[in-house]
Length: 223
Ligand code: ADP
Ligand code: ADP
View 1 (cartoon, rainbow, N blue to C red):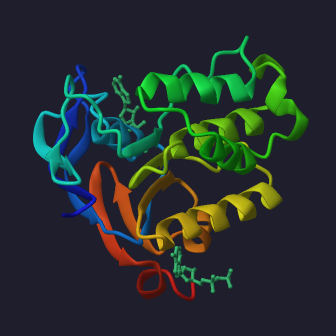
View 2 (view 1 turned 120 degrees about the vertical axis):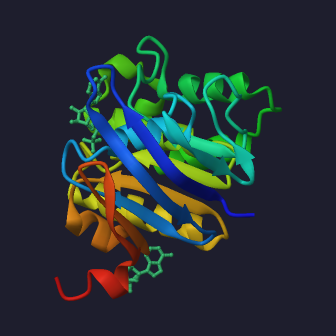
View 3 (view 1 turned 180 degrees about the vertical axis):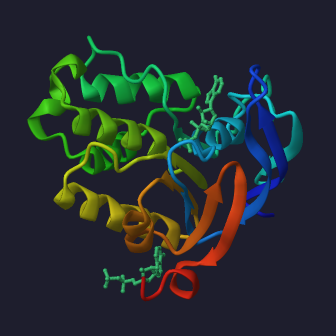
């Protein structure tokens, strides 16, 4: 069962612009896959289709063997950070995670909550309202929320945005360990260096098409 299979995916916006132009790629267990491309390449559009937030014109997305489409409930085994409304500002970071957990309908797991809170590295701010958070803190909270319940597939759209270098290094280790445990991570990025340092595999997209796909060590070594 492939964790993530994207086949012939196409999406044009109403103005006729084809943001994603027939992309096919896979993410396997144990991999940290970087979806790399300049702004406008179609990364966010793709990520939104991966979780069924946007309807594709053609092609399919299969997550853990199940077809993903708008209207179909997103599998509990998928965690995602996709640009959106974000955390509830009047609640604390901890309360946001508790609320996200409650929304899954699963019994609460204190150990897991503490684990993702540690990843968010909010310190004492975990008990302060999110409206007082910096962009980096909000970003880390979003990543932590996506990791609640240890989903088999983790999808993060530009997760390193707003983080400083030590935080980026810490997150890199977290994501590698996560994948090394037999899970799958997909991160989008517009920065080659980020993908080089964080990912085991890369899918390079340009103008809605895949232009390169393979192991980071094979494709990006020496650049
Ligand atoms: P990336 O995440 O790689 O920057 P996006 O998926 O956000 O790329 O955007 C791909 C292209 O689609 C861009 O040229 C963008 O301007 C265009 N686009 C995104 N959303 C819309 C929309 N709602 N309507 C029209 N064009 C859009
Ligand atoms: P460094 O010593 O520079 O921190 P590592 O030796 O840990 O880097 O990894 C070197 C390369 O190995 C990385 O650039 C990456 O492409 C690859 N790599 C191996 N395993 C993984 C993994 N599970 N996740 C991400 N990258 C990995």
